[in-house]
Amino acid sequence: MVRILRAAAEEGQHEGREAAAALATSALRARVPPEHRDEFDALLAEARLTYRLRDERNFFGDALAVGRDPSGLGSVQAGEILVTPSTSPTFNVVLPLLGALVTERGGALSRAAIVAREYGLPAVVGCPAALEAIQSGVRLKVDGTTGEVRILG
Image (cartoon, rainbow, N blue to C red):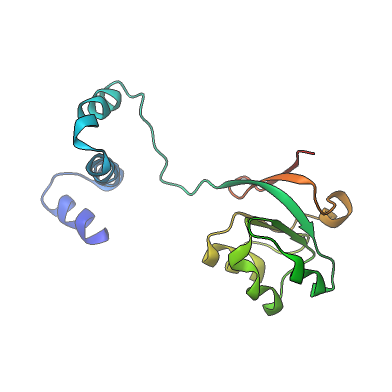
């Protein structure tokens, strides 16, 4: 993608953000079935079609609250949201099953944040007292973009 952007800029077609927007629009249009491209173009022309280049991930699911003892990891079901004080390599076995991750400790460069990014998981790290507030089985919404965890019931 970087080579395509550079080539477009060198040819004087686009510069900077304009090149990225044009490339994204072109790539998006290529995925639209031919019979719907006129409608796509009309929506784009009216500026009613928008897209985001940043990662926006929300996940709704049931919580599995695991304390400091990782023995509770054996009961993880696919799509559950793991709520824990922090992660360790022991947690790697369940990461592919998770829908999202919430930890009480950590920051952008913590192990939990790094492995969540690697697995494409929405995650909120550094959420103090999460285990006190969230019980297993509670329905949650985890917004990995804003860092918000909502208890839905």
